Length: 99
Length: 465
Image (cartoon, rainbow over all chains, first blue to last red; front, side, top):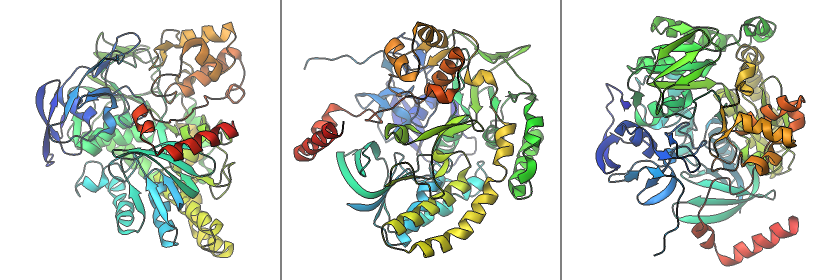
């Protein structure tokens, strides 16, 4: 869906998107990593269950909420990728689990 | 206690911080992003000299360099989630939550893109034009496949040209500028001589888009997204085109979230079709210790933003006794002259790129107004007929504006839809009243606050309510 610019000289960082290893340009956000990984969407909405993908990329719309390194409901466009970051789709509303 | 706390490290915030530092103010610059620049100069420190983003973007490096060389306490990746009228700021970062106090506060929170509610705008593959730019700026990444840009405004043409330079030219620009705009704009060309540099840039941009061979369809109305699970095309009255990406843009509006939460006085601006805080010539708001600079006070662009930031810094230094009013006025005079030149062409641009009525009030009932709570325009209209007089009452009827974005996206839509349904001006309907926390924070972050500080604040808030 998105790809690094053809003559980009940017170094890349390895991350995991939905369990799949992807290299993304350094400085990219987790939301950008999802777009580069080619995921069709980043979450299912809490209300109607519809698929959503990042929309504004600047922290306004909250449509890019995702699970990052195990923590749900992160604004993935506001999180810069780090080596080894695990990014997962978020499915519906967050539920409470007993531990 | 710091002298001067600035929220937002875009051109206004950076320019204000650098000058405030020079004037001897103990200054802290708070910003959510990992690097300075705001959205306009986002990640400019990473850019190469030959960047497809162009020279105006690279020029932002002068401000980031000045900031890095200054004594200002710059705090990236820091979210301001509550500000009190007395200058208490509540922050969250990777280390937890804390509060600081400042003798003066400057809000330099910039602009957001105006929402463009068309049928299907929540579908994956639909993004804002600004989002495409941010991907290019931060990740050197471009859309793959057929990208269509729809809407209008200088940023749309700039982004089209930047994408073309980056090897990903859009397959089409669908321009929505209403037919009467050009004629209306000509009446505002009085500022053309003072604004000739900006006018020349605009013509250069249009020429660049034409030379890049990007097809432009003008007078597009009735935009809608085609596709089931993601964008497969874009349709309009009388045509359609296959597409993998749709990037929407109808100009930018001030990000008023914090100012509205502080209940600063705001007025509806009919020329820019947005809410703007009421400011004096130094950016002072209706609260004595809180000022606003940059596009958050009204849309005038990055260079004007930096100038307004400097004016606010001069005024803060005077209020805190570091310079005299006479010295402030002397230093402000050339900045004001440059600001007037920078703003001269704005009435023309506002008229030329004035969004059509359907951008503010979607004609159909099925279009989503609130992306978070999935409330349609039809449900907003229905709630008005049931008696909801304004945006805040609408929340109780529909949950519209109560999702995670806290009304940032649907706010402009619901105010306009309610006004149209009630047949009263938007100014009379008003806007959402946002509340802290401005961004969601965890209960754990609040629990981690020093107990005494928190107890004091609860008492303070309860006393003031």
